[in-house]
Image (cartoon, rainbow, N blue to C red; front, side, top):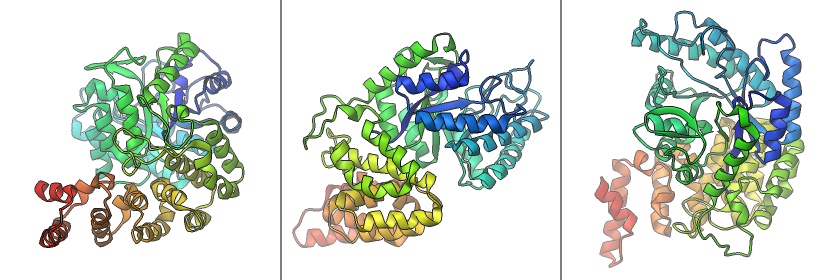
Length: 489
């Protein structure tokens, strides 16, 4: 099982009414949608836009579709010039206004984020001027996003001013790394213009990933293709999304296939399901694992809907996860205990926690998460620990308490879960170093420790060296991971 939600983009249903497009997408089996605001698809300039937002929000809820808001309509702002105006042209005000409208619509829909790009730099505009305009424009949109708590996803786009992932990451850093500014990654763009493959780009983006677009492409050619027609390694790409713990929307992006939208969308979903099937996977605990290739087990979908309707339902659903969806490791061929990549029930519990964080007030969320951990069995506690990374900033103090509690245990699966993405981002240096040592003591592979390369410092190397010397003095073997860490320094 994966934690992300497969979806389809409405820009690939341009010949359908929006209501019909949403119904077809849901009927095909997708559980999310990338909604491109356009003339016939929730026009942000319509006089009754508020009424339309309420209607679409009800449609999404009734169909069980999660959504992101896309802003790549071609001629919405200017009937004569495609994608004009942009954030880097002489008069970006209309684009900024459009993006702030999109933020308000996203808030009304309960969307995961608003996705946007820079636009093409006009030849007469110097790069430093364009860069300044990007900083100013994105800052203005961030003000509205911050007021409404709506994440933004900056998308690197071939041929545009912000073309590469490195450009988007640089801009984010120059703006002070705002929490609500993340990255939208089109995996086809990675094939077309990035120096690294899509899976590597996903790992590089990590926790900053707020939106994913799925399509195939060929090197050097910006043309959205159906899966299998280009050079994308789809199984490796989807595996990387699971590996980094991505739990958002991953929607197919085929904007030039509207003429056969239902058929194309059906083929895309079949290709995605096939790419998610691990070869020769068998269950070890009696659970039916055929569904592991399917992001949305029927029980889990219903459980998420129940939590949305009644957050208190998490108390009975969380303990039932393992019985309902299975407990097998996600990558049994390389990680038989689920220490590095986790287990089926881990990711199901992450999904439930992500939904809970959407519907429960942050002031109450920390207490609920603490209760799930405190009264849960070891599997439930692992699910909480792995799910901390998808929870809002208000839960960080509680999360730190739970991680430190887990690191006092000797259950290797609990320790491994504690040293994931949340610990890498929030655990103080002293506690994190001791967490790494705890992994070496109890036999947790350092591959389970998120960002071990980035956070390793001289003090940790000294501590590991002392540990290795003690082992050798006692005539005992030094763990291979300790040797590798010291040799790499």
